[in-house]
Length: 575
Image (cartoon, rainbow, N blue to C red; front, side, top):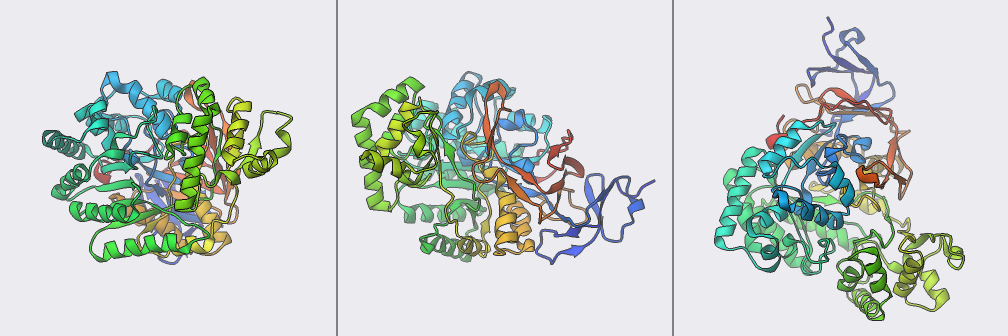
């Protein structure tokens, strides 16, 4: 009888702990790593020949929105294609529990805009056999999974459940309502939640509700947040994910440090971004992280390290919502959008807000980059616009003597909102990204997996990180990369025994050829029609991964799903 269920033979182990890589065989038994080294091929009931391959811990993706998709896609692709073996759901304060039965459609409508997940796919693909958060975890526990999962208690549904939607959007919680929210958070933590999450982007949120109004968390008070932090302090468990920008960066960062101090728990700060033309942007943020941790405030920064671009139409795009006029113009049905985009007063408002942003911030939009630099990708075969395919919106505006906003909107209207724009492949500064990864407190990402499905493919970040910053630019060592992709995020999020290859740990493993590793297609991905309700999404797959294992079972072989679903719900990070 074989000593091991499976042996990974002949590979180079990079174990996630920063120990220098070494040659060793890995024996797996009962879903765990039973032995590293000193193994014969005959010891394994099944042997995987990993000669010339890297054998490393599966990747831990802390920032996803697969809450809906995991119900019809157990592998949580895009992430699953790129070596991710564990995901955290319920980020940014958004999710589907607790939600009363009569409020389900409204919850899905919210997610159809704020995270740009197709409504028809959610309507057809979601199980909806829960109401409370503990019941949601029971559903996650029961359904087939090709990845392990943790889930936050997202604060938006918690606030709506307690206060009602209209009240949560128009007033602050009473003391009694705060006490009830604390009780429900305690209940969620008892059931296995990993902590809580929120988005606080102010009145002009860049990720607004489907009707254009701010999300309820965007306008929640400091007091409400700190009350939730106190629950974690009393329990001495869990962690917090927060996305915050209210217009005063200094105040926002000070509050997040206070949140860490009040909770006594790790805070995941979104995001640490790099600008190739301004080194001070990331360096100031890294200093803030270092200062927080020096004071004992455990704050980790999630870095925007991927090179995936945006490819979008104004039918789907929602990330200009921080401009009230853009928000107004891009809400409603297609006919309503077309009418508003043609309105001279609406256009004047957009132009004024963009020009004002340029004066104050030096850029047109926080997300997506300067409008005049967007490339025109598709124009629906309109003869007058075809010469501008591959050129910029600025080129079109100059040719027509227009403001870039008018040029973009005229093209969008002429194509019935089907004109496609892409962000240019600009210098992402490998040097600066290397600096970000030198900080002890930074984690690669942010994937946003499961969200923005028609214009963003951030779930490929793990592969891009290894190809770009490790292999091609040599800014990060292989050992450091696997620490950042696996052990550090697992530690920050409270995963127990995952993120490393060590004897006795769960066997979440990726086996790949570094020289052959590749994101395909590059930059903006490709369109596939594989979502429920006949909906499409934009994806990037990977080449170079030989096997992915979750809890000792092969879930992917040469990029193809095996049908195995050994993933687990990790209540309290355990399982």
